[in-house]
Length: 303
Image (cartoon, rainbow, N blue to C red; front, top):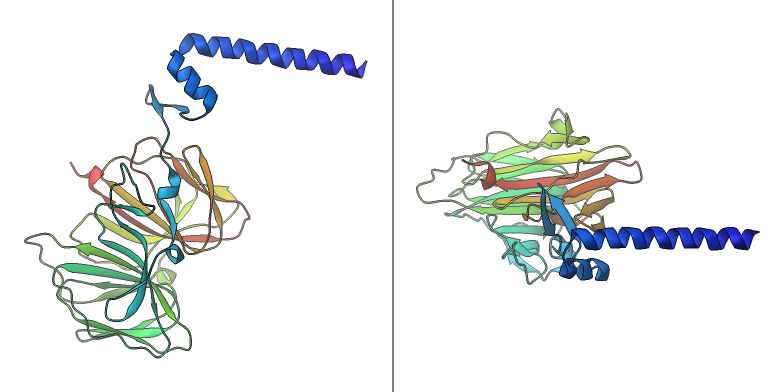
């Protein structure tokens, strides 16, 4: 009797699949049907338009340890998360930036002091991931610890000192200033630990400001986002002229992008593909707090 039930079930499933297959053939072209069956060009409906979702997410997710190092900003050993490239058609993993000039991980060894450094056409944001130290710029000296953000405007000389026994680790974000831009005169600092959280962005994002008053040459935003319980963010896609980076610095998460699912761990950054179709969402799968440094340049919102 069990064998008869099993055979009947298989026949039913086969007939159902054949029926669905026949119905699918009647709704799409032969070429689309072949691509669908081979799973090389899956179909996605967006705003009523049938489009392929073939963006390779592996060009848009990168750990800094995968990159070669160089010396920058007076003495930091820097390894890029991302570099300049073409996000619409990337050919090298991580070469996807359009507006941000540099997005690096920097390390300053214990006891080290950087050379006094000044950038006439660039502005730099440093976010401290670990270690302790100080930074001096103009008449100001700021103590550094995990969560500190430092904004160095163009034309201002600065110097970092590692005062601890461990490496001073930072994220380094560089923007170029535009012609005629008048930069600020003083270094700004702050910490997300001192910021009042804002709840509810994309369902479950908790937002924390790092510092206030920075004058950027681009429509640039930098703050901290967390998902602090077993939850997932609202999946959404980005369009052209949007450059949005999520750099995980606490916890481990799952990252959903289009048809792909990836694991994102500490030290890994992700940029949302600006293709209008690859919806992304971060997922807290273990209930432990997860934190990202969020960076975005949004020329798509300027009319």
